[in-house]
Amino acid sequence: MKHAEAHIKAADANKSDDKTVILHDKWNAKDVLAHWKDTVEQFKKHSGFEPPAMEMEGGDEMMMEGMEGMDMAAMNMDAVDPGAGMESMEKTVPNPFVYDKDARDYAGFKNFPALLLRNMIVNASIFDEAKATAIGWEFNPQSGPKKGELASAAALISAAASKAVKGEQTVWFSAFVGAQDKLSLDAVHTGSKKIHFPWISVGWATKEEAVNAFAHSPAPGGKGLMGDMMGGVGKAGALLTFGMVGGDDELHQVVFEVEKAAAFQFLDCRWVVHRLNGTIEAAATKEDKISIYKMTAAALAPQTVKQWEESKTAAAAAATPPAAAATPPAAAAAAPKTDEMMGEMMMEEKMMEGETA
View 1 (cartoon, rainbow, N blue to C red):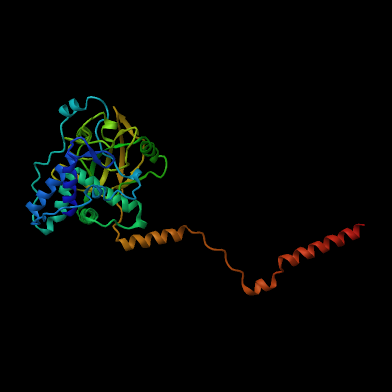
View 2 (view 1 turned 60 degrees about the horizontal axis):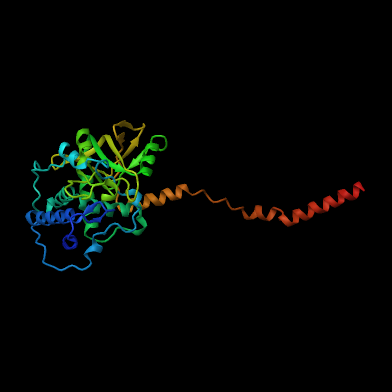
Protein backbone atom coordinates (compact mmCIF):
# COMPACT_ATOMS: atom_id res chain seq x y z
CA MET A 1 0.00 0.00 0.00
CA LYS A 2 2.95 2.32 0.54
CA HIS A 3 3.78 2.02 -3.15
CA ALA A 4 0.18 2.83 -4.09
CA GLU A 5 0.05 5.86 -1.83
CA ALA A 6 3.33 7.15 -3.28
CA HIS A 7 2.01 6.75 -6.82
CA ILE A 8 -1.23 8.57 -6.03
CA LYS A 9 0.60 11.47 -4.43
CA ALA A 10 3.15 11.76 -7.26
CA ALA A 11 0.59 11.46 -10.07
CA ASP A 12 -1.83 13.86 -8.41
CA ALA A 13 0.98 16.39 -8.04
CA ASN A 14 1.68 16.44 -11.77
CA LYS A 15 -1.53 18.42 -12.46
CA SER A 16 -1.37 17.56 -16.17
CA ASP A 17 -3.33 14.83 -17.93
CA ASP A 18 -0.92 14.63 -20.85
CA LYS A 19 2.32 14.56 -18.88
CA THR A 20 3.79 11.12 -19.46
CA VAL A 21 5.47 9.83 -16.35
CA ILE A 22 6.53 6.18 -16.51
CA LEU A 23 7.76 3.43 -18.81
CA HIS A 24 9.33 5.43 -21.62
CA ASP A 25 6.59 8.07 -21.82
CA LYS A 26 3.89 5.47 -22.16
CA TRP A 27 1.49 6.20 -19.29
CA ASN A 28 0.58 9.66 -18.08
CA ALA A 29 -0.50 11.17 -14.79
CA LYS A 30 -4.22 10.71 -15.42
CA ASP A 31 -3.82 6.99 -16.14
CA VAL A 32 -1.50 6.29 -13.22
CA LEU A 33 -3.69 8.19 -10.77
CA ALA A 34 -6.85 6.37 -11.88
CA HIS A 35 -5.15 2.96 -11.84
CA TRP A 36 -3.75 3.29 -8.33
CA LYS A 37 -6.95 4.78 -6.90
CA ASP A 38 -8.95 1.86 -8.27
CA THR A 39 -6.38 -0.56 -6.86
CA VAL A 40 -6.63 0.97 -3.38
CA GLU A 41 -10.44 0.82 -3.54
CA GLN A 42 -10.30 -2.85 -4.55
CA PHE A 43 -7.98 -3.61 -1.63
CA LYS A 44 -10.38 -1.91 0.77
CA LYS A 45 -13.38 -3.73 -0.69
CA HIS A 46 -12.02 -7.28 -0.90
CA SER A 47 -8.97 -7.76 1.29
CA GLY A 48 -10.00 -6.06 4.51
CA PHE A 49 -6.79 -4.01 4.40
CA GLU A 50 -7.26 -0.39 5.32
CA PRO A 51 -4.36 1.78 4.06
CA PRO A 52 -3.11 4.20 6.74
CA ALA A 53 -3.12 7.91 6.04
CA MET A 54 0.46 8.90 5.33
CA GLU A 55 2.69 11.43 3.70
CA MET A 56 5.21 9.84 1.36
CA GLU A 57 8.47 11.45 0.38
CA GLY A 58 10.19 10.62 -2.89
CA GLY A 59 7.04 9.59 -4.71
CA ASP A 60 8.41 10.39 -8.16
CA GLU A 61 11.42 8.16 -7.55
CA MET A 62 9.22 5.29 -6.42
CA MET A 63 7.32 5.46 -9.70
CA MET A 64 10.39 4.01 -11.39
CA GLU A 65 10.70 1.06 -9.01
CA GLY A 66 11.66 -2.05 -10.94
CA MET A 67 13.22 -0.15 -13.84
CA GLU A 68 16.79 0.16 -12.56
CA GLY A 69 19.35 -2.23 -14.02
CA MET A 70 16.97 -3.58 -16.67
CA ASP A 71 17.93 -4.66 -20.13
CA MET A 72 15.48 -2.35 -21.87
CA ALA A 73 15.59 -4.45 -25.03
CA ALA A 74 13.63 -7.08 -23.14
CA MET A 75 10.82 -5.06 -21.64
CA ASN A 76 7.77 -4.01 -23.61
CA MET A 77 5.33 -5.09 -26.25
CA ASP A 78 2.41 -2.78 -25.74
CA ALA A 79 0.61 -0.26 -27.86
CA VAL A 80 -1.72 1.43 -30.25
CA ASP A 81 -1.85 2.02 -34.00
CA PRO A 82 0.93 4.57 -34.77
CA GLY A 83 -0.87 5.87 -37.86
CA ALA A 84 -3.06 8.93 -38.26
CA GLY A 85 -6.74 9.07 -37.35
CA MET A 86 -6.35 7.56 -33.89
CA GLU A 87 -9.52 9.10 -32.45
CA SER A 88 -11.76 7.91 -35.29
CA MET A 89 -10.16 4.47 -35.15
CA GLU A 90 -10.94 4.11 -31.44
CA LYS A 91 -14.58 4.96 -32.10
CA THR A 92 -15.00 2.29 -34.79
CA VAL A 93 -12.93 -0.59 -33.34
CA PRO A 94 -14.66 -2.62 -30.59
CA ASN A 95 -12.87 -2.45 -27.26
CA PRO A 96 -11.94 -5.96 -26.03
CA PHE A 97 -10.83 -4.63 -22.62
CA VAL A 98 -14.28 -5.08 -21.06
CA TYR A 99 -14.32 -6.74 -17.65
CA ASP A 100 -17.90 -6.23 -16.47
CA LYS A 101 -18.67 -9.96 -16.77
CA ASP A 102 -16.05 -10.88 -14.19
CA ALA A 103 -17.84 -12.78 -11.40
CA ARG A 104 -14.80 -14.03 -9.48
CA ASP A 105 -14.76 -13.78 -5.68
CA TYR A 106 -11.74 -11.79 -4.54
CA ALA A 107 -12.53 -11.67 -0.82
CA GLY A 108 -10.23 -13.11 1.79
CA PHE A 109 -6.58 -14.00 2.05
CA LYS A 110 -6.82 -17.14 -0.14
CA ASN A 111 -7.94 -14.98 -3.07
CA PHE A 112 -5.33 -12.28 -2.55
CA PRO A 113 -3.07 -13.39 -5.48
CA ALA A 114 -6.12 -13.25 -7.78
CA LEU A 115 -6.94 -9.77 -6.47
CA LEU A 116 -3.39 -8.62 -7.23
CA LEU A 117 -3.61 -10.04 -10.75
CA ARG A 118 -7.02 -8.46 -11.30
CA ASN A 119 -5.74 -5.05 -10.25
CA MET A 120 -2.71 -5.31 -12.54
CA ILE A 121 -4.62 -6.40 -15.65
CA VAL A 122 -7.50 -3.94 -15.25
CA ASN A 123 -5.07 -1.14 -14.26
CA ALA A 124 -2.44 -1.87 -16.86
CA SER A 125 0.20 0.70 -15.89
CA ILE A 126 0.64 -1.31 -12.68
CA PHE A 127 1.02 -4.49 -14.72
CA ASP A 128 3.78 -2.82 -16.75
CA GLU A 129 5.64 -1.80 -13.62
CA ALA A 130 5.38 -5.27 -12.08
CA LYS A 131 6.59 -6.85 -15.30
CA ALA A 132 9.53 -4.45 -15.38
CA THR A 133 10.44 -5.65 -11.90
CA ALA A 134 10.16 -9.34 -12.83
CA ILE A 135 12.12 -8.95 -16.07
CA GLY A 136 14.78 -6.90 -14.33
CA TRP A 137 15.49 -9.90 -12.10
CA GLU A 138 15.34 -12.51 -14.87
CA PHE A 139 17.73 -10.63 -17.15
CA ASN A 140 20.03 -9.54 -14.33
CA PRO A 141 19.92 -12.52 -11.94
CA GLN A 142 23.27 -11.66 -10.38
CA SER A 143 21.71 -8.59 -8.76
CA GLY A 144 18.96 -10.65 -7.11
CA PRO A 145 15.30 -9.68 -6.78
CA LYS A 146 14.51 -6.01 -6.21
CA LYS A 147 13.16 -5.37 -2.76
CA GLY A 148 9.79 -3.67 -2.60
CA GLU A 149 6.05 -4.21 -2.71
CA LEU A 150 5.86 -4.62 -6.49
CA ALA A 151 8.58 -7.27 -6.50
CA SER A 152 6.76 -9.19 -3.76
CA ALA A 153 3.45 -8.91 -5.62
CA ALA A 154 5.05 -10.06 -8.88
CA ALA A 155 6.56 -13.10 -7.13
CA LEU A 156 3.25 -14.04 -5.51
CA ILE A 157 1.37 -13.76 -8.80
CA SER A 158 4.02 -15.82 -10.58
CA ALA A 159 3.80 -18.61 -7.99
CA ALA A 160 0.00 -18.68 -8.13
CA ALA A 161 -0.13 -18.56 -11.95
CA SER A 162 2.33 -21.44 -12.24
CA LYS A 163 -0.15 -23.63 -10.32
CA ALA A 164 -3.25 -22.39 -12.15
CA VAL A 165 -2.24 -22.96 -15.78
CA LYS A 166 -3.43 -26.20 -17.37
CA GLY A 167 -4.44 -27.93 -20.59
CA GLU A 168 -3.56 -26.88 -24.12
CA GLN A 169 -5.19 -23.71 -25.39
CA THR A 170 -4.74 -21.55 -28.47
CA VAL A 171 -4.09 -18.04 -27.15
CA TRP A 172 -3.58 -14.86 -29.17
CA PHE A 173 -1.18 -12.10 -28.09
CA SER A 174 -0.73 -8.68 -29.71
CA ALA A 175 2.18 -6.30 -29.35
CA PHE A 176 4.28 -3.49 -30.70
CA VAL A 177 8.00 -3.99 -31.33
CA GLY A 178 10.78 -1.72 -32.50
CA ALA A 179 12.78 -2.18 -35.69
CA GLN A 180 15.59 -4.23 -34.11
CA ASP A 181 13.21 -6.53 -32.25
CA LYS A 182 11.25 -7.05 -35.47
CA LEU A 183 14.44 -8.16 -37.24
CA SER A 184 15.17 -10.55 -34.39
CA LEU A 185 11.67 -12.00 -34.53
CA ASP A 186 11.90 -12.51 -38.28
CA ALA A 187 15.14 -14.47 -37.81
CA VAL A 188 13.91 -16.81 -35.05
CA HIS A 189 12.58 -19.49 -37.39
CA THR A 190 15.91 -19.66 -39.27
CA GLY A 191 18.00 -20.06 -36.11
CA SER A 192 17.27 -21.73 -32.78
CA LYS A 193 13.51 -21.32 -33.36
CA LYS A 194 13.15 -20.76 -29.60
CA ILE A 195 11.44 -17.78 -27.96
CA HIS A 196 10.61 -17.00 -24.34
CA PHE A 197 8.57 -14.35 -22.49
CA PRO A 198 9.34 -13.99 -18.76
CA TRP A 199 6.82 -13.81 -15.90
CA ILE A 200 3.19 -13.89 -17.06
CA SER A 201 1.63 -12.97 -20.41
CA VAL A 202 -2.03 -12.02 -20.81
CA GLY A 203 -3.72 -12.73 -24.13
CA TRP A 204 -7.03 -13.32 -25.85
CA ALA A 205 -9.19 -16.21 -27.02
CA THR A 206 -9.57 -14.89 -30.58
CA LYS A 207 -7.54 -13.21 -33.30
CA GLU A 208 -10.17 -10.47 -33.59
CA GLU A 209 -9.74 -9.45 -29.95
CA ALA A 210 -5.97 -9.41 -30.29
CA VAL A 211 -6.10 -7.17 -33.35
CA ASN A 212 -8.72 -4.83 -31.86
CA ALA A 213 -6.60 -4.40 -28.72
CA PHE A 214 -4.12 -2.25 -30.66
CA ALA A 215 -6.64 0.59 -30.89
CA HIS A 216 -7.18 0.72 -27.15
CA SER A 217 -3.67 0.38 -25.70
CA PRO A 218 -1.04 3.10 -25.25
CA ALA A 219 2.19 2.92 -27.22
CA PRO A 220 5.71 3.28 -25.84
CA GLY A 221 7.11 6.68 -26.67
CA GLY A 222 3.93 8.59 -25.98
CA LYS A 223 3.05 11.56 -28.15
CA GLY A 224 6.50 11.70 -29.82
CA LEU A 225 5.87 8.40 -31.60
CA MET A 226 2.13 8.35 -31.87
CA GLY A 227 1.11 11.83 -32.93
CA ASP A 228 -1.37 11.31 -30.10
CA MET A 229 -1.09 14.35 -27.86
CA MET A 230 -2.77 12.63 -24.94
CA GLY A 231 -0.40 9.67 -24.78
CA GLY A 232 -2.11 6.87 -22.89
CA VAL A 233 -5.16 8.86 -21.72
CA GLY A 234 -8.35 6.89 -22.21
CA LYS A 235 -6.52 3.70 -23.22
CA ALA A 236 -7.70 0.56 -21.49
CA GLY A 237 -4.78 -1.81 -21.25
CA ALA A 238 -1.36 -3.04 -22.17
CA LEU A 239 -0.46 -5.97 -24.41
CA LEU A 240 2.30 -8.56 -24.45
CA THR A 241 5.72 -7.60 -23.12
CA PHE A 242 8.63 -7.95 -25.52
CA GLY A 243 11.06 -5.09 -26.13
CA MET A 244 11.08 -1.50 -24.92
CA VAL A 245 10.48 0.93 -27.75
CA GLY A 246 11.58 4.53 -27.40
CA GLY A 247 13.06 7.57 -29.07
CA ASP A 248 12.55 7.64 -32.83
CA ASP A 249 12.35 3.87 -33.12
CA GLU A 250 10.04 2.46 -35.78
CA LEU A 251 6.97 0.67 -34.48
CA HIS A 252 5.61 -2.61 -35.88
CA GLN A 253 2.36 -4.37 -35.03
CA VAL A 254 2.79 -8.08 -34.35
CA VAL A 255 0.42 -10.83 -33.27
CA PHE A 256 1.32 -14.27 -31.92
CA GLU A 257 -0.97 -17.25 -32.41
CA VAL A 258 0.24 -19.61 -29.68
CA GLU A 259 -0.88 -23.22 -29.91
CA LYS A 260 -0.79 -25.79 -27.07
CA ALA A 261 -0.36 -23.16 -24.38
CA ALA A 262 -1.01 -24.13 -20.75
CA ALA A 263 -3.25 -21.26 -19.63
CA PHE A 264 -6.17 -20.23 -17.46
CA GLN A 265 -9.12 -17.95 -18.16
CA PHE A 266 -9.31 -14.79 -16.07
CA LEU A 267 -11.60 -11.74 -15.92
CA ASP A 268 -13.90 -13.71 -18.24
CA CYS A 269 -12.22 -12.47 -21.45
CA ARG A 270 -8.47 -12.88 -20.85
CA TRP A 271 -6.16 -15.90 -20.93
CA VAL A 272 -3.05 -15.99 -18.74
CA VAL A 273 0.12 -17.96 -19.51
CA HIS A 274 3.00 -18.39 -17.08
CA ARG A 275 6.51 -18.02 -18.56
CA LEU A 276 5.38 -18.32 -22.18
CA ASN A 277 7.97 -20.45 -23.94
CA GLY A 278 8.11 -22.24 -27.27
CA THR A 279 9.20 -22.21 -30.89
CA ILE A 280 8.49 -20.32 -34.10
CA GLU A 281 8.93 -22.66 -37.03
CA ALA A 282 8.06 -20.43 -39.99
CA ALA A 283 8.19 -16.85 -41.21
CA ALA A 284 5.40 -14.47 -40.24
CA THR A 285 2.43 -13.94 -42.50
CA LYS A 286 1.43 -10.38 -43.28
CA GLU A 287 -2.11 -9.04 -42.99
CA ASP A 288 -2.29 -5.34 -43.74
CA LYS A 289 0.19 -3.75 -41.27
CA ILE A 290 0.24 -6.72 -38.88
CA SER A 291 2.84 -9.52 -38.87
CA ILE A 292 1.37 -12.77 -37.51
CA TYR A 293 3.71 -15.40 -36.04
CA LYS A 294 2.61 -18.95 -35.34
CA MET A 295 4.18 -20.25 -32.14
CA THR A 296 4.00 -23.68 -30.53
CA ALA A 297 4.24 -23.57 -26.75
CA ALA A 298 6.70 -25.81 -24.90
CA ALA A 299 6.23 -25.75 -21.14
CA LEU A 300 9.23 -25.12 -18.91
CA ALA A 301 9.68 -27.40 -15.92
CA PRO A 302 8.96 -25.50 -12.68
CA GLN A 303 12.04 -24.85 -10.55
CA THR A 304 12.83 -23.36 -7.19
CA VAL A 305 15.47 -20.63 -7.07
CA LYS A 306 17.91 -23.17 -5.61
CA GLN A 307 17.26 -25.62 -8.46
CA TRP A 308 17.67 -22.82 -10.99
CA GLU A 309 21.01 -21.80 -9.49
CA GLU A 310 22.19 -25.44 -9.49
CA SER A 311 21.14 -25.92 -13.12
CA LYS A 312 23.08 -22.78 -14.13
CA THR A 313 26.20 -24.06 -12.34
CA ALA A 314 25.87 -27.48 -13.99
CA ALA A 315 25.38 -25.94 -17.43
CA ALA A 316 28.47 -23.75 -16.98
CA ALA A 317 30.52 -26.75 -15.88
CA ALA A 318 29.35 -28.78 -18.88
CA ALA A 319 30.36 -25.97 -21.23
CA THR A 320 33.89 -25.71 -19.75
CA PRO A 321 36.45 -27.86 -21.64
CA PRO A 322 38.23 -30.44 -19.45
CA ALA A 323 41.71 -29.53 -18.23
CA ALA A 324 44.67 -31.29 -19.86
CA ALA A 325 45.68 -34.47 -18.04
CA ALA A 326 48.76 -34.12 -15.83
CA THR A 327 51.87 -36.12 -16.81
CA PRO A 328 52.54 -39.01 -14.36
CA PRO A 329 55.69 -38.43 -12.21
CA ALA A 330 57.48 -41.50 -13.56
CA ALA A 331 56.84 -40.49 -17.15
CA ALA A 332 57.97 -36.97 -16.41
CA ALA A 333 61.29 -38.24 -14.99
CA ALA A 334 61.87 -40.45 -18.00
CA ALA A 335 61.08 -37.78 -20.55
CA PRO A 336 64.11 -35.68 -21.68
CA LYS A 337 63.96 -31.98 -20.94
CA THR A 338 63.38 -29.64 -23.84
CA ASP A 339 66.66 -27.75 -23.43
CA GLU A 340 68.61 -31.03 -23.25
CA MET A 341 66.91 -32.21 -26.44
CA MET A 342 67.76 -28.95 -28.17
CA GLY A 343 71.41 -29.30 -27.08
CA GLU A 344 71.66 -32.83 -28.38
CA MET A 345 70.11 -31.78 -31.69
CA MET A 346 72.66 -28.96 -32.06
CA MET A 347 75.54 -31.32 -31.29
CA GLU A 348 74.32 -33.83 -33.85
CA GLU A 349 74.03 -31.00 -36.38
CA LYS A 350 77.62 -29.95 -35.82
CA MET A 351 78.79 -33.52 -36.06
CA MET A 352 76.99 -33.88 -39.35
CA GLU A 353 78.60 -30.70 -40.62
CA GLY A 354 82.04 -32.01 -39.58
CA GLU A 355 81.53 -35.26 -41.40
CA THR A 356 80.42 -33.49 -44.51
CA ALA A 357 83.44 -31.20 -44.50
